[in-house]
Image (cartoon, rainbow, N blue to C red; front, side, top):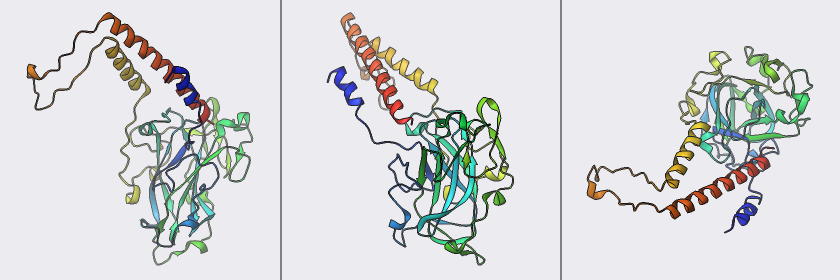
Length: 328
């Protein structure tokens, strides 16, 4: 296949990937690119009555979601569905700030930016409930997303680009005072989270007001690189509450510098005609077991260098093209 053919192949549209999605509880759909809210083409009503196998208790619940494409200052909202339907969702926590520190690699899931938050689950009884994640792209709304801007609204508002993800159904096992979810009157989320901050960091480090539910601007803050929790909120939002998603934060973050160094080392080894072997326990230091590589010829080095250069140019073109296509 020629270089031109490879470039043309790279231009063929690929299945879109969501820019944010649930990790725990598990996402309802493993496919990505969900931009029709709240849950895409897999509504909760499609699930059978006995579909929910995981049980969640009222009270603190650790949840985990992740971002595959960086969108500066784009905040998140978490809601709880009704029983057996995605309609009439209750907002549990709004204005969750973006983590502007990282640039995840779209095709490398291990590099996705993790977010870990402990939310408060209401004391209800529900046979098929789900958590909804909404992520308005406030990096797309220009000056409206600045601290002095009008912002954009969601759901069903002026935020024209929003990503969604919903969890698989689970059961909520309330205590003796619990009410059925479909009879539960959703309180204002601020009344449950009175100590959630009223301002985050906006453009140019300025304070941005986040007191109005459903109105979003560019909102960021500082997240921990160790446990991926938000460092600028009270401990109750950072504690590991155990349960379904407790003690599951095991991701490894690979820095762009480390990736670049590894790539450079590999390219250098190929160009110089050298190979690196790792002796097994059986091989030990026995010279007779070492692979004998004939010394490279000058022609071989030139060919290898030319091939590596072409691959690097092609990879750069493909990466740039695909990132441009999916960053919206």
